[in-house]
Length: 230
Image (cartoon, rainbow, N blue to C red):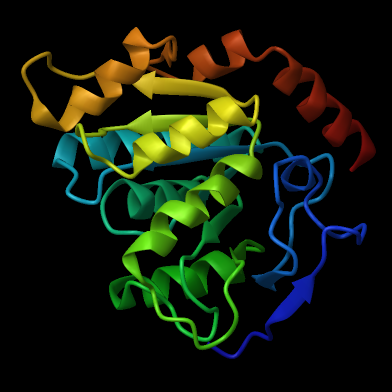
């Protein structure tokens, strides 16, 4: 991967504006590719690494629908739901942003190196608040989740077991004043125990991309304004 690595502080205009609003925004933020514009609506799709085929298919289809409607999809480049979300966004001809838990001089997991290349080729971005050479340590995955939610207007959780890291992303989103959406699953499935707990705690249930637009009507006006200025 030959693309240069840059950095931006929270005081610079290029810095993602929603991320600037969170408590202790990462500064500097390291990135490859193209950072999102101020008017660019971002939605995160997150979930378990050990996803079912059903969960990955749903995440991929949802991301594709969002990308086709000019929403930039954010996730963590992990195996499972994250990878499916990035793939769906690319399939929809849209942009997607990956937030890593390590330095940008390496891609983790290695299985998604080619996906990262395609992501950048399609005008997307890879970001991290870790300096070059930082390995992907376990605690850093939870720390980076605040960036995934902080970049976005909303977070969608797909397949989260009781101890899923996606639950921490949802908690960060709630603390940051972002909307949290959850895809429901079979009542007896262990893959959805965390998801269903979020719904009980007040997260909104969705089954299609249209549900998100119904609950966030401001997205329609944002996208309309962007089209008028392109």
